[in-house]
Every structure is written in C-alpha cells, then in structure tokens.
Image (cartoon, rainbow, N blue to C red; front, side):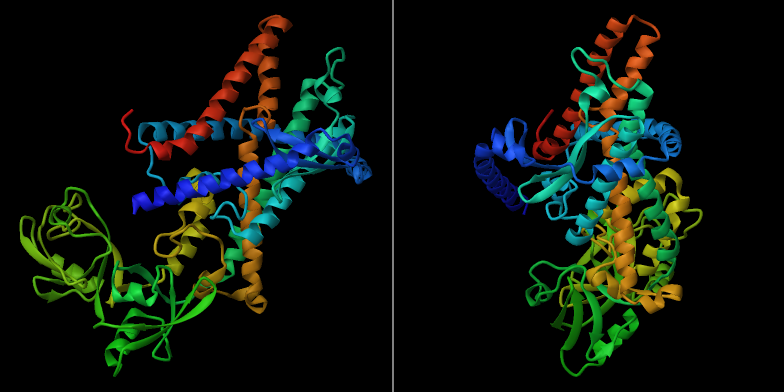
Length: 548
C-alpha cells in the first residue's frame, strides 16, 4: 500500500513537471514581447521559469480615488491594525518554525495531508478545498487584499500605476494593485514619497482587510448560521473490512444510510432489527458523494462495541486486537451495547485473562490491567478507546453519525481561546473522525443528509448550507492568506513591514548607513529561514524512514 502511494506520487509529479515544462515553452515568445506588454499582458518568472501571466489595466483607478476620500478613517483603521499584524507575524512564524522542527525530528509518512499540491490554497489543486466555494472565497480574498493596498496608497498620496490579475496555467492565483515603487520605496537617486509609518500602513492594509473580512464571516458562521443547523439521526459506514463482501459490493467509509428494506433508519437498534427480521438479504439505500446507492448487505448482522484505537503496551495491544474491531462477546457473554459492556467489565479485575470475540470472527485472549483512574472505574482494563455502539454485517461497520457532537464542537470553538483558533485552522484538513474522514469541506454533498435547517433558517431549506459554506470558506481563506502574508519574508507584505520596523529600531542605536546594512542582513536571514522551512515541509515526508 505504501509503495503504491509512493508510485502514484511520483507519477503525479512527473506528469505535473511535463505539463509545466510545456506551458513554460509556450510562454517563451511572450516573455519579451513589447506588443503584448503594450496590451497590458506580460510574463513573469517563478524560480527562473516563465510561468505567470500578468494582465494589467488602468480602468477602475478612479474608483480607488473615490474610496480613499475618507483619509482620516482609513489611516485610523490601518494604524489600529498594525499591532495585530505584528502579533500575527510572530505567531505564524513560530508556528512554521515549530512545524519544521517536528518534521526534521520525526518526518511524517507521505500522505494526502502533506502532498505538495495540498500545501497551496488553490481550489481544484488542493483536494481539501472545494472547487466552487474555494474559488469564490479566493476571489474575495484577493480582491479585498489588493483593493486595500490601493486605497491606502491613494490615502498616502502614492500613485497607483495599474491593477490586474496573475494567472498560472488557466488559474488566477493572485490579484494585484501596482503602486509606484519609486514613490513607495524610493529609487536610486530619489527618496520615497512617504515616510516609514505611512509605508507600513500601506503594506499592512491588505492583511488587515483580510483579518476584518475573516472575523466578520466567522462571526456569522459560528453565530446565527451554526445556531440554525440541527443534527439528523442517521447511520453512517465507519469501516469496511478489506477483501470482505461489503468491499466487493461497493461499500465505502462515509456512506450515509437512508433506508433499510424500504424503511427510514434513524437508530442502530432499529437497523439491527430490520436486518434480523428480513426474510432475505438486506436491501439498503445509501448516500455517498452526492449520489444515491442501492446496495445489498449479506451475512448475519451483529451488535457490539467499536474499538476506536488501541493503547500501546496494553493487554489489547499485546494480544493483537486491532482497531476498528467490533467486540461482540467477552468470555461468551454478549456485549450488544455500551451499558452491557461496562457492566460486564466492572465485574472483572486486573490480572484476569478474558477472551474477547469480535464480529470479524476472531478471538483474542487479553490480560486485563489496571486503569490510571482506577479509583473512579472499577474492574480490569482492556486497553482500548471505545468509539461507541456499532452494527457489523458482511464486513461493513455501521454507527450513528456523531452529527450532534460535531455541532456542539463547532459551537464551542469561539469560546475555546487559542485551542479553538488552532482547531479552526486545521478543521478543513483534520475533519472529524467518523464523520468527515478526509477533512471537513463544509456542509455539502452527503454531509447535508445528517444536518437540517431549523429555526429562522427553516424556510431557506438547503440554501442555508450554501450560506454556511460561503461564510466558512471566505472566513478561512482570508484568515490563512492574511497569516501567510504576515510572514517576515520578502516579497510578502510581512517581509517589507518587518524591514521597516527593524530598520526603525536599528536607526535608534546606530548610524543610518549601519542600520541599513544590519536591516538587509536580518531580512535576508529571516527570508531564508521562512523559505527553507516551507521547502522542508514539502521534502520531509519523502525522507521518512531515513536516519538523520
């Protein structure tokens, strides 16, 4: 399986490299074309390879002048946001460096989480970002960011030469507003038109606007929108045994069970009774990836307890009991549900040997140990984390969808402080085990089968989920783009801001010429550190298993 994953990754990289090479060759005639430059189209290089196409226009510049008229307001907003930008710069830099340190110390195994394409926030390329909602959110992010730069440039009297978009292949990857560099940074024989404080306001404007939009979108998402979404009692497929009849029949993790033998299903007990009472093999209706599936389920259904994970060096670990097993008996006594399981375990004692039978047809002799919280829990300890009640049939394991717990977790995020902030940042990638195994794409596709609008949003129907997805992705991408742009690495906004801040500090203790030299050195070191860290993030998974 690991070898297959590595080969698929290599194939993907070779195909991508070939396409990029062909694309770069096609752009070569445009690279130095004065005719196309006269039309506002030019080609830029990435790492020396012509890949980016710039589309420039002077249309709309009058709008920037009109929007910039309340100058005092914009200066106050930008000045108030600068401390947040500096804090975000320090926070995200530490996050990147910590991630790099852990990857060097223990490189992760190659997986979809750390594929190079999933590092970039490009919908369609990044498999965790939905295509439609992602592109809408990315467009809003770029528009807000660049317009903010343009407005503050005009507020401070800096000329804006043009604005436009940047594309790679057919994908727009950035929007830009092009201030006059000489007026903003100064030229060889010309000082800048603005002082450092004004320049920092201009450079910070894009990030500040992203943070404002992210805060507004997330406040609406976690407030009235999440408050109007209610869970629906459904069963989902949480595991499919390899080489089983269920796998051959087409079962997959994440399927939502809608009906069994023609009846709506809302509980495990009802599902089990419907299967047991059927005169022939069960006929199930399931929802998966926006499509309905009609599948059969074979084999005698069994109720039990699903093993979520195994604690290392425990009795279960020593016995070889695997995760995702469904425990149906302990020493011949049924464990149909959690209540029965706990009652049975409370009658055991540490050091006792018990035989655990699973629905997969295997028996494991387990030597019970003592729990760390033995004063609270009586009986012996198997060494497992329990996922909950389950029904196993034909190789497929069914559980009640944890939609209620998921909503409770989402609603608690705003009050969780920094841990909630980190949860929000990781949510699209980590998802919720048992509900969204490949990240959380928002309330779309099959996930809408386990939620429904309620309260004020009930008349909206499924349109509420559209609103939820729009707010989630606009908020998330604005937040992530803002944080990334805060990194103290040129040419990012944070790099230029960091340079001005550092130079202002040096100028207080040394001569201007010395301050300039120290600033260039400091900025170069930070830029190298950030770029190296990002490169290690891409390379580290491919070094897994190597000795360092």
